[in-house]
Length: 298
Image (cartoon, rainbow, N blue to C red):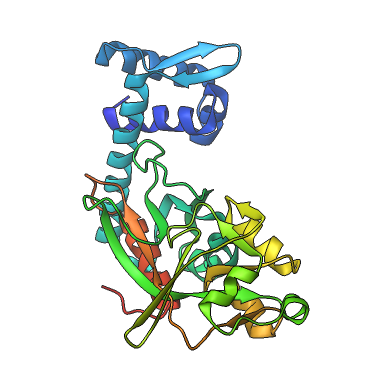
């Protein structure tokens, strides 16, 4: 078996979790898969997999080999796609990471046309509000909200939205609508502790005037989905991106207040693994959503 076939076999073993599942995916016998992995380990002079009753676990060398082998296979597949022409569509697996609530509201519902355009493409979506290691997790592209603190990241800005103060009509009917930023100190603020927009420090600007409020409230939440639930339950108001409550603002179930003041903006970024060229799949995905979010493709 040649080197490319051996790499593909190893990648399938890790992705499927067993020799038998990889054999079914490759349409060959399990003994052939076992023999290929053994020959690969012998040729490289290192152990790639740890076999136990609980399954297969890659060694450190195995994980490194997997990441590089997967990238090499993708590069070859993309070269073939380019040679055949774009009409054949993209193939293989695109591994995407995005914040949970943002993806649920704005990414997952829009995947249909992209999948229709590329019927041989599989999208593996990792939902996580944290900033995970893209290389270690094998991520092709990640979507992130807020400022980028790492200047070494390979990134593309997709669009920008403002932060707003939101609450339900029922909440404001009970507690009154704030007329100034200082009035917020008399309200129950729901603070998003993972926010890249400031957490409990809320900044308001109008002309040459700036007000900074340290929001007070009895509920602090570490996930955007929790912010939505608390606000929609009428338990408080929150500072949130326009994305977070877009459907409810449109329907009137949530209203924005203090609209005469401007709050900071929040950017949406596409992040690619440092040290790697963005794959054709990742670039196509980002171009597609750049158009949806109203920006021109780069």
